[in-house]
Image 1 (cartoon, rainbow, N blue to C red):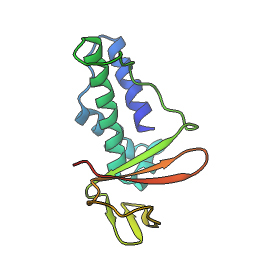
Image 2 (image 1 turned 45 degrees about the vertical axis):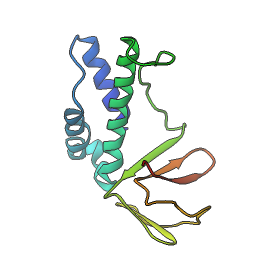
Image 3 (image 1 turned 90 degrees about the horizontal axis):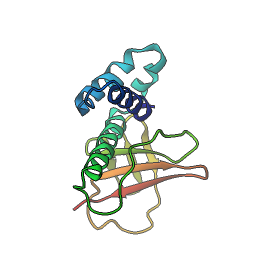
Image 4 (image 1 turned 30 degrees about the horizontal axis):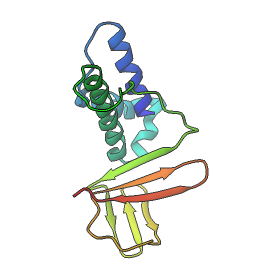
Amino acid sequence: MVWNDSLASCQEKYKSGEKKPVNSQLQKQFITKAKKNEDREWLSEVSAIPLQQSLNDLNQAYQNFFKSTKGQRKGKPVKPPKFKSRKSKQTARFTKGGFKVGQHKVYLAKIGKLKIVWSRELPTAPSSVTVIKDCRRTRIALLDIS
């Protein structure tokens, strides 16, 4: 929802000849102000961390696209960001402060404790937790970026 609304706004600004808004402006408009809107007040019930990460990802997608069009990025050309469908894979990434990892549970902000079965021991403390929901199941991925 936040990704698609922000992307639509960025595309609209581009068509009118304006520059893409900076990330902080998008966060203010599509997270902070949107929570006060009757249609989007449900955003207050979820953690702001995955919402902010969604806009960070959109910003990175635009940076990759612009660098690619200018020839500043190696590899094959990158296409502009696309709208996301509810039917496709959905993700929510929690960064530091948004999760705690215990021996048999993972705590996620505004969600609570989730039981977890480890497939292997973690070599270090994770830097983020990604909850992935696809058509078959919901998975949790713990990432360590060292």
